[in-house]
Image (cartoon, rainbow over all chains, first blue to last red; front, side):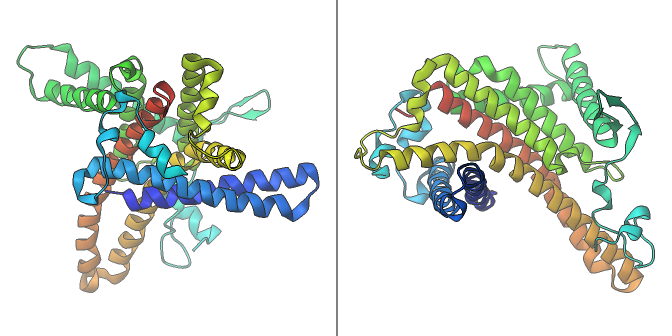
Length: 89
Length: 257
């Protein structure tokens, strides 16, 4: 319920944050379009990172039918997110 | 659509009520503190009403404290259990320290959303500044908790492990931006859901009036169904806000490592 919208806001918000940071860094350092373009790309990457995280939460919520191993998510106390880190490389 | 004159009276020359008219802020008690406009507006009124409603409900329902709960008391107990389980499942027992905050947040947003479902009321959570303030409190609070618990080591949260050194600077920047996204996505989600839903209700309400007794029945039927959906969304968004607060708390307390 509402997962699609959650992920859409995740991506959009990340791009907005990246664009804002790039815009102000450009203003500050006087490197007009370069940092803005770089930070839009980084913002998009951060948005995809957010969506991957949201997807893991969603998979944990919905159980097994998403085909993702959710053992490490259902017990946050265990502290082992190694799986997460391997995917990141 | 954004006809200023039509907006003034919620109708007018166009014959169609302005669907955005309901979100207008009106000053009830004009007040200025040190040059800052701190008027008591209809938004403030409904926030106060939400707090009063929630407090009155919880005080009334827990005043009896019978072993076999009555109707009111069992609703209050269900709300307590619901949030307590949410915190316990998402943060673990270490998070129960922050249960009062999550519970207040959930009940406040729920009360605001539900008050907004009553006709002629004002929906506080349909304003981005209100939801952003709530999200900023969560964001700043969680960041402080993270630094208080782990000290400067909390910065390791932004450094993914097992990454080649060449990629590390880029990934740290991505992680930091991803972290800064939280208050924005948290606030936009609640605000957009509430505003879109209430605008839809107004637009379809105008269809009912505009089509009259002949053709108005189809949008009326839709509105009845959509009102039900909106009540679900009002609850769901309060839940989503609370559960994401829990997830962020979990990140701050047990860092991903």
